[in-house]
Amino acid sequence: MTGLRTLLLFMLALPAWAADQDAEIDRFLGETLGKPPAAELLWIVGDLQPAVRTILEHDYPAARVRYWRSEKRTVWVLDEIGKEMPITVGIAINNGAVERVKVLVYRESRGWEVKSPAFTAQFSGAKLAEGQRLDRHIDGISGATLSVRALSRLTRLALLLDRHVNKGAKL
Image (tube, rainbow, N blue to C red):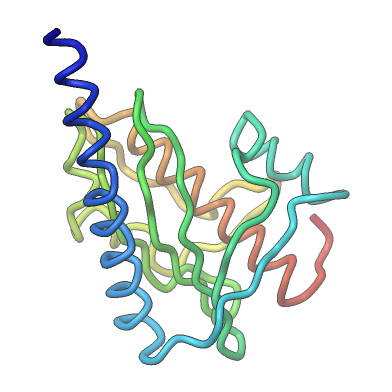
């Protein structure tokens, strides 16, 4: 009976979690773009699919990614598993460089330090370098290694996707 009660409480909480996530996404878009334009969709197909797989070391869990574009700036809201749970991250790319990284929803029990602006500021100005790596070193956080890796992968992914939609550049 206890298991059934826990499952019922979990199911009742799902809409609240989704509403919180939507509110965080809306807040990030407003802070980054002002009044955001309509979302666009990028299908992860063709040459893009293996490039995404190389960065994440697995396929992206969706066939398409929603993003917002305003001139040379794109904003991406992406998810990646830290240790066990997805981390939702907003990433703004301007003219091929990271403008801002913000953890929108952190669901892990440990490693929450990656939400700190002091940590995410390390990504500002980063670009995609040879081998789809970041052009700079990102300092880790003791006890948050998998979350740090997740944010680094998502940042690299956002830079790759930005390059794809803005320039059609070689992946």
